[in-house]
Amino acid sequence: GLILLYARANTVFKGGGRYVQVTAAGSLTGPWYHWRLLKIEGYDDAKIEAGNIYCAAMNSNPVDPEMILGVFPVLMGDQATIAIAVSCDGVHFSRLKRVMKSGIISPRPN
Image (cartoon, rainbow, N blue to C red; front, side, top):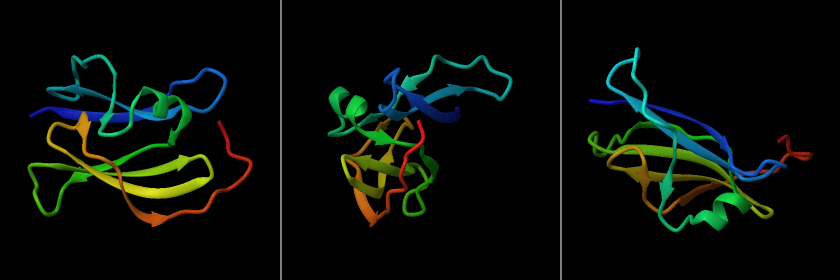
């Protein structure tokens, strides 16, 4: 199988647009594929630039180990939340499901 590596992607040069990208390789020594932004159902390009998904924690889904479970801290406007989504391939994810309200710490770093 592939090794997946996730990292933050800043999609707006002057701040905002925080998102998550992924790359993959057959082994730790590579070669690594090009970085790709995650595809999250219902989260289009406008939301990527206006929203803020700061990072992601990924693991196999405890209910179905063939799937990936992602945990995402998300800020949309003045609403902060912890959300989850599932994926079959590590790139394409289901719609974000809010599981916990979160607080906002100001000022937010870029």
